[in-house]
Length: 391
Image (cartoon, rainbow, N blue to C red; front, side, top):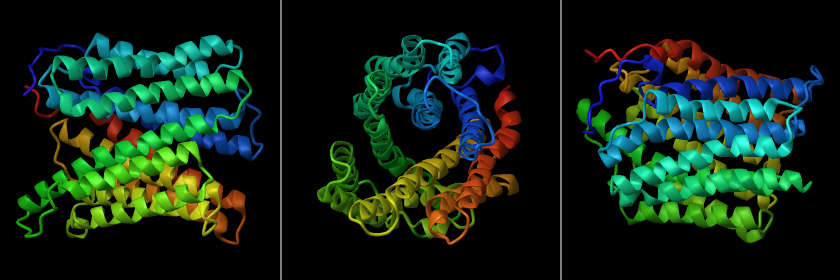
């Protein structure tokens, strides 16, 4: 166990997951409705960058790093046996993230200032990860440090592209490709681990397959497909690489016996989230090959589906487990899961339904962002209050 440090400040800054999970949910609950209002012409709000660029940036380089930080600041002390970040250092890191969001929303600040303020968070966070890896001699976590460094670089690249009036798509693909890899790496560890715990507690005979070369192959294929997608997003070979990675990761998911966890949605949702990742690879690859959905809808299988579902799965479980509460999904949590999956399904497949495209987009936004707003409402009190197991 990591060293215990007596902390007397606000509970909200006693653990990394508290401010960052809450803030990520707030951002997701605000950015998507704002984007939809802009698309529908219901508001003329303006930012420094064009609305699409703002929307893409805030979801890929604002929302996602916030969730990642909440998870990593909670997991790293267990990996390194070092004290967690809390109190004023945690508050300072959260302020750096918040300043980036405010800078991106301000239309009158110079692009250089916006880039410096916004880029600071991921640079600092990457530095924290590397510091903990080195001081804790957690050399098996080197891939996490590399991914965070590349993510910080992708955000800087985003701003550089805009300065030079270039499309930002390649920087967004880099960010999403890194997320693919992280979902396979981390999701592929926590999902079978928590499943095994559940099956043991309930004396269910099935056991997830232990990590093996097949799992390493599954992650490697995602890495290959992700790099190909970044470099040659329209190439036939990229499409085939994504489809192959999708099938391999579907097989990987099947080795964890997720269907046996139907009694506990808090565990089952992890399998659904990983299933979205495998399906996103298949849908995206098929789209590149000219089969199935348009490319824009296919990408949302990764963003609204895999990312949206898996982040809420991790956020809800960690928020309950690390505050001394029972790791059980109550009615509100189940509703959150239903809404986020419904929003993802509507966003990915809704445009193919012969109904109003705006209606499908609006319904998708209501469901998907509604899930995150419900997280704020239901889990906010948990995140702001001391843990039940604290003396």
